[in-house]
Image 1 (cartoon, chains in turn blue, green):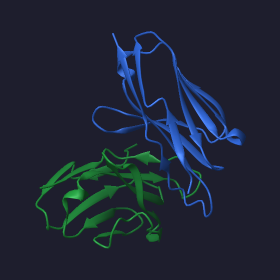
Image 2 (tube, helix red, strand yellow):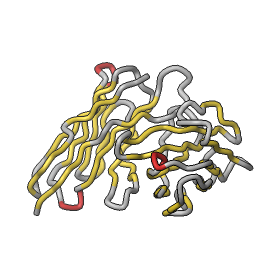
Image 3 (cartoon, chains in turn red, cyan):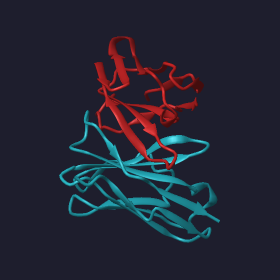
Image 4 (cartoon, chains in turn red, brown):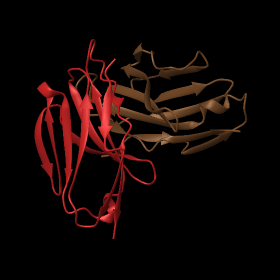
Length: 111
Length: 114
């Protein structure tokens, strides 16, 4: 099955700093989503981005499907950005839509 | 509109008891997915439904786990004879149809087996 690797596993930033989170995957995908898991455990949809580039406020994401990676950019970080960021992919034979998750990047933004 | 809802939000049960977890998908979404999040295993797929059919049950960890969906809407995940290793957060997601469509997650049910 598809393997998903996220880096770095942990990241500590000062408020106002920028960061880049990376997601590598081992096979072609039809679906790629970025999530932020808040302190209550809820997975918040950030981007649905199987290819291309999208921006939403201080966040943007780029997926280069041919090279099998995606990047999540956080600019001017705030303490509320703290939490775990997951990349999840779907695809392969059958394309049932089930998502394979990476292990996550834990972000801490200090005031 | 309303998002995915799950109940109960928390469940504590004794080892050996059966539990039922419920998921209400977004109205109009025909695809429904169950995942589990545990400390040792991360987020893992359990089962999905397209309508009331479950074509892929490959993620169910044992035959103590089963799921059904009725009326193309509500789904129930049942765990029989619970074990301590079943303790986890059980997450439900829905999408418009199966395949390459964005999934939206519910808040989860935190299951603790004592």
